[in-house]
View 1 (cartoon, rainbow, N blue to C red):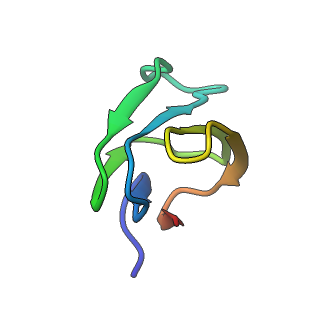
View 2 (tube, rainbow, N blue to C red):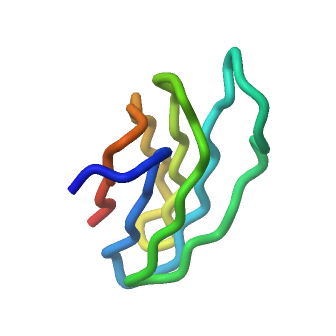
Amino acid sequence: MAMSGVTIANMTSARIDVRITADGEQGGTAFYAIDPQRCDSWNRENMQVAFIRRDDNHKTEVLTVTPGFCYVIS
């Protein structure tokens, strides 16, 4: 299901912290917490990079993200 901006869905059992770049755009680039089984969206018009720090395994995932899609972290 396409949506505006970039959406990250946290389907893990622990909190994640997400940062999405805003290269060539305006918008916040701080890390934002997403609780388990929740999602959040960022207004982005161009492809960006997402950094996801996971509390469940203490690792960081790096994704290339495209507006209009939901990225599920599980």
